[in-house]
Amino acid sequence: MDLFGILAMVGGLALFLYGMQVMGDGLKKTSGGRLETILETLTSNRWKGALLGCAVTAVIQSSSATTVMVVGLVNSGIMKLSQAVGVILGANVGTTVTSWLLSLTGIESENWVIQLFKPSSFSPVIGIIGIGMLMMAKSEKKRDIGTIMVGFAVLMYGMEAMSAAVEPLAGNEKFTSILTMFSHPILGMLAGLVLTAIIQSSSASIGILQAISMSGTLTIGTAIPILMGENIGTAVTAILSSIGASKNARRAALMHLYFCIIKTTFFMVLFYAVNAIVHFPFMTQIATPFIIAIIHSVFNVAAVMIMLPVSDVLVKLALRTLPVTPDETEGTDEEKPLQILDPRFLSSPSFALEQCKTAAGDMAQYAKESLYIAMDLVLDYVPEKAKRVDKLERLVDMYEDQLGSYLVKLSGRTLSNKDSHTLSTLLHCISDFERISDHALNIMQSAEELANKPQQFSAKAREELVVFSAAVKNIMNTAVLVFQNDDLELAQTVEPLEEVIDGLNMEIKRRHIRRLRKGKCTIELGFTFSDITTSYERVADHCSNIAVCLLQVNEDGFDTHEYLERVRDIDNPAFQAQVARFEKKYALPKMKKEDVEALPTVADLGDKVMQPVKLSVLEQESRKKKAGKKEAKDKKKK
Image 1 (cartoon, rainbow, N blue to C red):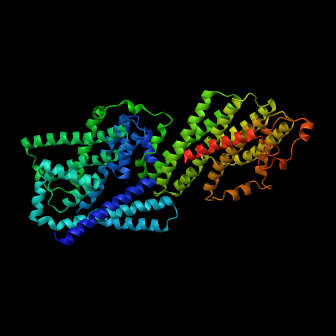
Image 2 (image 1 turned 90 degrees about the horizontal axis):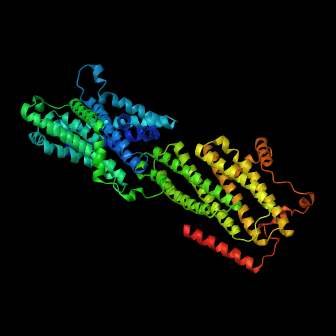
Image 3 (image 1 turned 90 degrees about the vertical axis):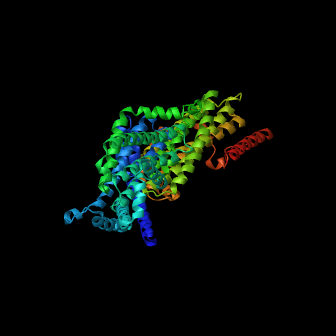
């Protein structure tokens, strides 16, 4: 083979590998994470798991990709080793589909009907249709299908190019002698192993072998050991992906490696032992792409049928290699869900985004729990519950840090329009949930400060806080439901309730000023009361942000102020009706006529509730100290 022949071979290989990559990416994108979700939920039975592993691999055209996904699912704690083993075994059967597709290149017949099934005949048609869909289709799903078709056409053209480059070697004695050398079981197996380990795809290495077979110089005796080596080489990808992962993930990769080694060793020993006695006559026959596909399929199907009933042996071998240690049980159940943000999932962006939504949903629930506990502490302080609020606040902070970093990485991947909207929503909302947990911590600290004081809020102040708390709990619960269920209809009820809460906050402050003027409340208690109500109102603002974000992203808009002006318009009867309903539901206790007349005007409130009251030196120092603590805490977070 001269220089130009080598270049033609390398170019064909490049097209082949690129086509396989493009087609696989298109198939993954079209599935929208559904295949991985099925793997996650429907693997309770090992036979069912094997069928799923086979089906998923047949669709995405890569057993390595399926196995890496399984390693990620095990690493994140979603899948157990006993579930993973069935999927891994099934993936080895699913990968045989590729070899059957590639075997079509070996079709030889003068019949024009049969000729239509040759890739050189139908690939141009598929490629033209695919390009047409990419250029003209408006639907993203149709463009993804076009990508798959173009990838397949490029794949087949690469296969044809490799076959054409190798064809002149049919009469080359040096090339024939090299192939004869690989007919030695050990050398052939090592050649297949190294080739697959380098290109990280057993489907691609088998495709190369099928291309070489079209030269007419490859015998079945030479093809078999190379095929066996390729079956072991495919485990290298999973081993590499498990580096730095949890022990369970490494065990899953080891199970795949052990399965490949056991099935290959068993076959090689048995086959060549029988061959030494019987001397199979077909060993010297010329291998074709079709024969290679048959050998590959029969070998893998038989291996799975034999190993699946005793697959527990693979689990035990993995556990024997990497024994369970006490440190594996460390970490709370609350922190474990963050393991689902596995970097391996980034290769399947839609599925990775589903894991982000799950984690963000947990974060929302923790923020809600911390707020509810903190609000209850205002009227009934319990030290143990206060510790729970502090713990939840740190947990929510951790969620925001890890989720935010993961989402930024995910934003660099190719996403559908729907997934881009979801990612944008998550990035906006996790910040609001984190701030809500911060306000919950502030409320808890105010409750703690209140509990340490000799005086308590008056009965009327407590009644007002009960009403205020109920409204804030309602808006928080609604915001969480809107976020988790993507409920746009429910989202429209958040803003009317937020407006009512703003009115409650202003009215409660006016009543509190009246109590201060009449001496029914101390200034020190007034500071605490003001901090609590301000935190309540800020929580409602963040809940409004969450709901508005979902509504705006759904409309492809991000102008929040314009949206709020539109919905709050006085001519919006639906909005005004909802406001009236919430005002009735969260009405404050009625006041006596003389108390109403004594209320300060809104203008009297100014920017601070305590503005009309002259602060003592001691009280000023108290506020400065508290502000210093908050500033130190914020700096520590940053």
